[in-house]
Picture (cartoon, rainbow, N blue to C red):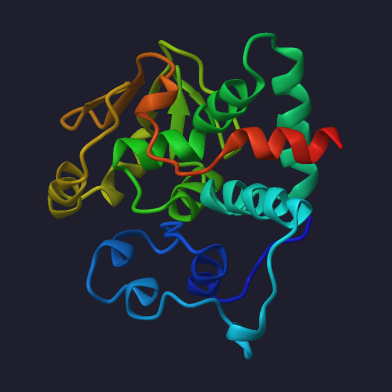
Length: 208
């Protein structure tokens, strides 16, 4: 599996938007994108007009990176599955990505970024409905309860819980800070998602 290990702030500059890949730092004055929002590389002004193909490609790359640097093969499977689900394919794609376990942890405030959430899951710190899950791409269903494993609760100090409370959870997620539990109440509506990406261009990219 190919994994990106380079500077993530460079990806934000390349996509022209904040991807929130460095957690709380992206919300502070230290954010590299705020200080230098120009694309990386030399001869920036010499770049030509983007073609229709290039426009669709950029939207695809933005979504893959926004949701935690998802690989091309896995992302293509999401698109194919979204097409088979019926209804609006673009909305289905968003729902599949939002139901990823690493994304649910990030949306709940248990992690400052999707990369941090992925690491916590891979280390086996969480249960889903009482069963240990260490797969970041695990698809959470409405009504599922995600809890910190008993042996891992020591990692969540009172100071860290206070930091978690400062991160407002998404409206479709309930959080019990005393029990360290998350409940995925429902699927979000498209208008509730703060993702400035045109999903229709992504569907067009894979339909060509």
